[in-house]
Image (cartoon, rainbow, N blue to C red; front, side):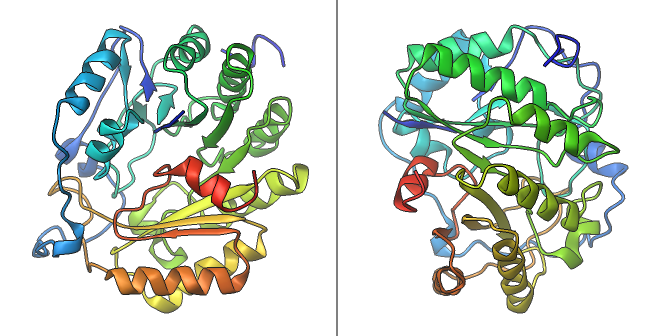
Length: 332
């Protein structure tokens, strides 16, 4: 890989430098130019009892936040308004988000800011590696925003992070949750780069059912994402692949079952299914709250299809208990 192409607990953390991004849109500003179409006047549904989060006692959350701020870090847990943030923080866990905190997409479910991001920080991989070493971690997840502005979609930066984290932390397990690397020649370029430093688990989320892509995930393509998962698996048959979807955006049970069939047909090993929660009043509304029994039923359906592990529940998220899921699947 040329320099030019590079420009005891599970942790869901974003490594950031002191420089501000060139543009940043959130909330109403972000959604104003979104091509998605949904009823912004739809009544907000009352959260059922099973979706409410009980906050833990103690100062563990604030203590960890203070420690992260000292290191100039921001967690994806905070950026994405994750409902599990208090549980994970109280256990000293978090997920590293690299490549900035400004996304080039305007997905209607996501609260991460949209805008024109800065170039990748060349010091970020080493900073990440040293942070992992300081915190004595054994399993981490590395994710990022979409970087459509980069020739490789950010793949070289992922590879640099993997390489430097492993160099300073022998024996660590690394899961990456990647964007779709969509664009002419970008997917093949990304796969070639990641082949030089493959992760222990490869994760890419479909996010929702195919018929809802236009209004939930504009700029992405359902079939492209399936192809990404399948092509990585073909190159690395011994590395577990993983994907996830959200429920509550207007999908049907039949459509969710079809997603699971599609994922299994593309050799995906693990799946996460969680309840969508509207981050702001300007984002896609929650159309329905699926019950815990329905989530459990989907897990049974997935296991019957042959998945190695199904994490299906209202508060499940992509990197929630990722280490436990990987080991429980028997794939690591």
